[in-house]
Length: 358
Image (cartoon, one colour):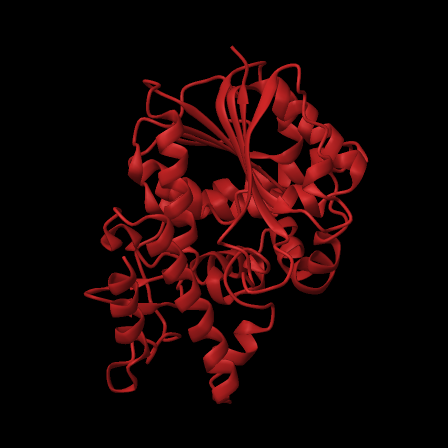
């Protein structure tokens, strides 16, 4: 394994054959039709209106509030004013557009730094991206030693940036999402058609790799309406033949492969109807009141496994989540290799797996 990792890192670090040359060139892929985008926009407007009347726990707050205020105001206005040209462009280039701020890869200023035709990134800025990519690949190889690296490959929907590995390119979060899709499938593969609930699904990357790994899965995504709309675009573009439904089109317990819902729809999920619930980081970004409500729902709707990755040393520490220990046992709590700085003195980011009692 050490030789395998060293081989890939050597190849990626070789200046003469650098796979990072052209990392930020434009990439295009076939996406959904304009009519499908209009359907998403209509659904978003309904979700936005309903969200306004929901309790505080389902409003934008804490970590996400400044992101919305600085980066997403124009996008929200475009949705509400039926600005199709703006939304279509934002969707088709979302990896390079403020609509995806906070959902992938590098820091919030990455578009200005790496994709600006009027300036070239500095050596320090280039090294920052290279180091981030090498860490992601190294962690994938360490945690998934028997998974072919070709599983990282995917279509370039959303005009992603990426680096070249063998004969394909690796796009943002591929290593992380593919690795956790492997873990999730290992837990639920005994079920004929398992239902997975992901809270805070980003742009839909983990859902994509889960369905590639196990096409029998049903996935319910729960997120803020703006992120949910982006998930709809991405997953419909990646899976044109899957039954991908938007909240309001079908009952939560209905017939679908993927159901994309705004966060407040969590209240409608039936007890023990989900085999596994997964969350990555966002629970620790919420207020105590919001976390309490989310954990209560998770423990109610989840029949077998609750798997999450969150912060231990933040104000909302994942060690203090109010898990229902009458229903669940803690199977493990470990520092994760996917932490942003695994060399740090304190390992802040931990993985937790809870399993329902017999």
